Amino acid sequence: MPRRTLIAGTGSYLPERVLTNRELESMVDTSDEWIQERTGIRERRMAAPHEVTSDLALAASRQALEAAGWGPEDITALIVATISPDMPMPATACLLQAKLGATRAAAFDISAACSGFIYGLQIADGFIRSGIHERVLVVGAEILSRVTDWQDRTTCVLFADGAGAAALRASGPEENERGIRSVSIRSDGNLWDLLYIPGGGTQAPQSERVVAERLQFIKMKGNETFRVAVRTLEMLVVETLRDNGMEAADLALLIPHQANIRIIQATAERLGLSMDKVMINLDLVGNTSGASIPIALDQAVRAGRVAPGDHVLLEAFGAGLTWGSALVTI
Ligand code: COA
Image 1: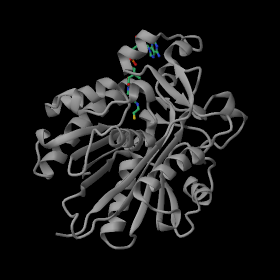
Image 2 (image 1 turned 90 degrees about the vertical axis):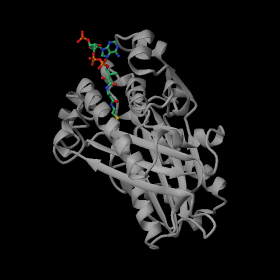
Image 3 (image 1 turned 135 degrees about the horizontal axis):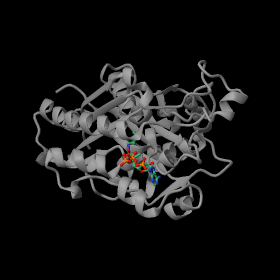
């Protein structure tokens, strides 16, 4: 049996400050009822003014290292999935590396929005199975509250802050039934304009115009994004199970990207999976993009909802457009 990539430890961090739907009612023309009914979100967390993305990543990473029994020097590759980096350059992974003391690691960011953690898993899986790297830390970290337009009710009720991390290593001779069974990632750049941040890059460099036209914030065609997400995710989860010779009944838990309860319900329904086999935290956490899946994974592990030997399906969909899934035996 060839070696697999095993999840040796997970961690997550949510900032202290809670922003409720009721508070949003005083900021934009919305209501707690509308937000709960259309999205499933009740509240979300906001980073404190002094916190930057690498701080959230640091807290999650420390937990994952502790769970894995690793020191920071054990990490040989450090990957951060984020669309809200501390700064355009250098990579948030390098800033995290310095804070963590992961002196031996090659550190870099990936930009695949809400699918970023799954993209990171595939990269880590390739590194580990090929023997290039032994120990990889994959982190998803976001402070979306700083790239959200607080005057736009169609987006500001959705996005939130947080970080999650997973420490990955090669399975040992006794452990080859555990680990990542498959990861698949896809994208369709033709649909880039369903969800994007227009300003701050080379197309519209930071300027007074960017600020005046609010181009530094997330723009989204919510309805179209919703429809493509449902269609794509339904296909993706069915394909992933089929490719692994499994059925939905074999799964201990589905851990979906936490974007919208209606998208998640549609995916579960397509699989014939009851909602008690689906990890949901978006009611309290909101959509944290690249951090969404690792936070949900860590919470599921710590709550005892998954145990070693359990099969878990991770799936995500986001800007790019990008999407991906992973079938993992914990
Ligand atoms: N509060 C109250 N009303 C709102 C609102 C809010 N926060 N946001 C939008 N509305 C209004 C719209 O203006 C629209 O009003 P109109 O009919 O008078 O024009 C109405 O609600 C319906 O808007 P629509 O966009 O069709 O709603 P929806 O049912 O599609 O729900 C989203 C909107 C954003 C919740 C939903 O489209 C969604 O979740 N899309 C996917 C987003 C996503 O997951 N993005 C991240 C991908 S990782």
